[in-house]
Length: 114
Image 1 (cartoon, rainbow, N blue to C red):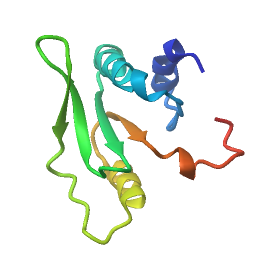
Image 2: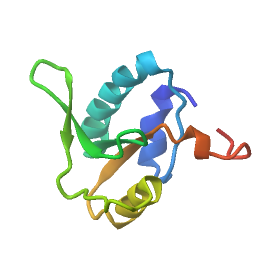
Image 3: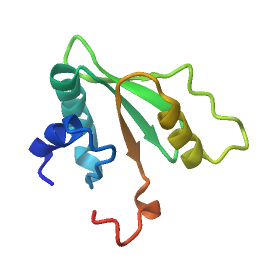
């Protein structure tokens, strides 16, 4: 998928889209997606990654830089599986949001079409 088609894909109500990004480009793509989702989808963007297991809202600072703000409502119980918990949180999320889940590629099956 071309990155330029990602907003169209998200706007079409497709619930999950996978994008494989090399680490040096990750922040740039998250920044771009945060701006595009806000402008075109009127949606907030959230970032979660398996290593940290916290959920953060992606924001654009006044200087145009990317800022991550912890989501205070996201409170994973100590013994909960982090990946299952974030999926449960997303499933119960009652707002409008684009969720970026980092480092989940080991859990995506070979037949996923990614």
